[in-house]
Image (cartoon, rainbow, N blue to C red):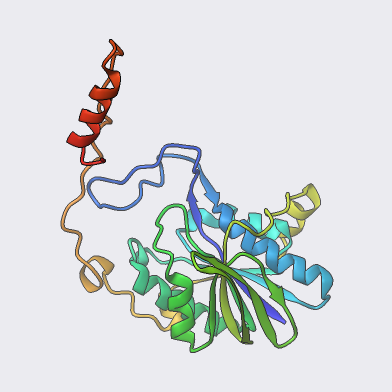
Amino acid sequence: MKIVVLIKEVPDTWGERRLDLETGLTDRAASAPVLDEIDERAVEAALAHADAHPGTEVVVLTMAPASATATVRKALAMGATSAVHVVDDALRGADLLLTADVLAAAIRRTGFDLVIAGNLSTDGGGGVVPAMVAELLGVPQLTALSSLDIADDTVSGERVSDAGTMRVSASLPAVVSVTEALPEGRFTTFKGIMAAKKKPFDTVDAADLGVVAEDPAQARYIMLSVAERPPRAAGTKIVDEGDAGEKLAAFLLAEGVA
């Protein structure tokens, strides 16, 4: 079985995160780049299956600048078999549609039985790329899974919603996305880090994938404006002089809460 795991380099969630006010894009120099934590869980899910089923191939795939090589190699150090890195300056600022087009093309080129992704990246929050990729590939999709079971010809899991917990399944090939309910990614070891340097690492661009990389800002969307979030204002203090309850009620009424 060949499992393709979609991974992404994002600014460290523990560091400062902000937008570039000129381009409207994430300022990736604001904090250290890391492998998205939800993607570590996706990689772990694939590796756990590979551990129990010898012969399983785990390929990590990302669309990112050339500087993300170290992040991709971390997934290889965790135990992935090989990596595909889509690098193309023309894709800078790509929106969800173009991103899904590129990833789907790379998956077709690589071949797959199952695609695993995180359900929501920490630097964007669209949460729709796995479903869009499945649509472009013409395969079933199981999104936002809190558990994952992979068999020879099917994949299944649980999806938690406001209405309850659903058990869903699909025939392979398929695309799934997982939530933070899945186990954390395993730690890398020195042996794994050294082995990662010798693993297949394929670097391609949009032309290699047959994708026309038009200027994303013109071809896919238009950024109307971007502004820095205003600083948080000081809160209202209520001093209890025997009428704090009345003051609080009045404040809530003025805020439209009560």
